[in-house]
Image (cartoon, rainbow, N blue to C red; front, side):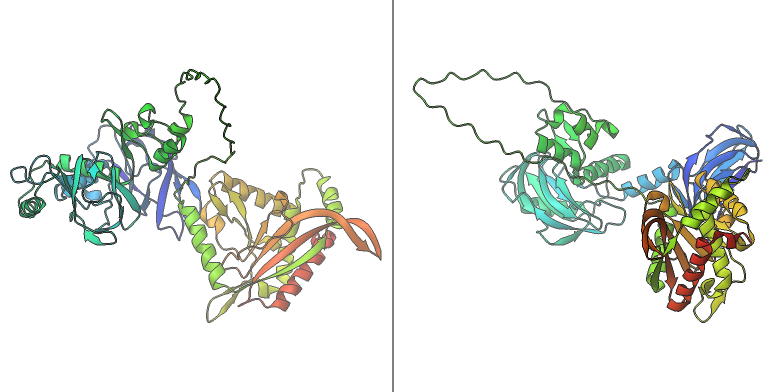
Length: 548
């Protein structure tokens, strides 16, 4: 019997997931434990394995698409099994059939942007152009500016006006040739979708008769096929986004607005460019990669006897380039990071304390420790261990603000910020104060590896009471971090720097490192934070105290 697999809830805060990648395709054999897909949550991208065996019969969410928790993700069953009943009752089907049906239904109820409304009453060479529907949320449009005025000749492909929608302002080009006979919506005015925008036709046409005929025709049922209407609307939307142009032979050329601008700046004829986009659409890359055909040099003009040669114009070397932007869809993880950090920064009153630590003893101690067999300790491990021990001595820093109460933790769970391709994750080392330096280093290495390979579990990123962020390996000398709530503090670790220092009244070469503590002033006072940093510096400058 076929099994329905829904979008799993992979963390306690997950509301929706995005399929980053499918590792199986429809028709593949599935064994229990096989990895079906990589699912991107609000915290990480994780592998999702199958708990069932059979054949992958259906994929409900395509790669790159997001869907709420419990939406239909896939169906696994026996090869050839009928799953139509499951698709019909699932309620979360994301296949194309329902979308096409909805599109056809919507198309059948939508008046085309510009069509000959009643051929019997309106001449064939007269066209009524209406306010188009450019998005599913658009109810009305505003004419930002008219680029043609009544009486102007209009060619197919000419820009008539700029239309402001609920999402953008776009150029609207004409699909017809003739004279602009009538403007129905003035600059700055708004009108509902399907309102008469303009009339184009031969000079001398009786506009009042056309308007009256058009008004009476709106009550008649539409006779155009729904699919044809949808095509007309789609073509008009392409025109309003500035993606069409006209060649000399009347053939319509599809090009992005940026490609059109680049072609105009470079003097490139769009009809000579081969488009690589959908339906031959010309894109920015096509313009950049276009090589104009070689032009034969013009024959030199004969110099006139007795005429003085005109001075050559001075060439001004001006910068030439193209302006452009590129937008990338924010991942669920990136949106979750932005939300969490924004909430922390704007809700918790941050203040910052910085100290400089003498690292000479730490450097020497690390060399001795790493000479031991099967032992590898990093400076980050030493900082984490020192933080855990300092938190034990200053429990006021190991707290959370809860409005009417302050929660003080009896345990110490250390969050360690780790950068991954999709953003930033914070694995948590549980009971860090009870681990030795080598145990702490092993735990951090294991969790960071899981995070980078997308195998970390949500439970391994929850429950931190204090966080450490280290950018010293990138040469950053000093920085501040945003508190990882519900923590009350986060430590920012800079690079170890060799520089002149004063010892016993003499200037000598030493190694120092700056540490900055960001504190939530609701739970940690300045004096408490300063005392914590003093204790932390004492442990780091005397590593032998952390081995006891």
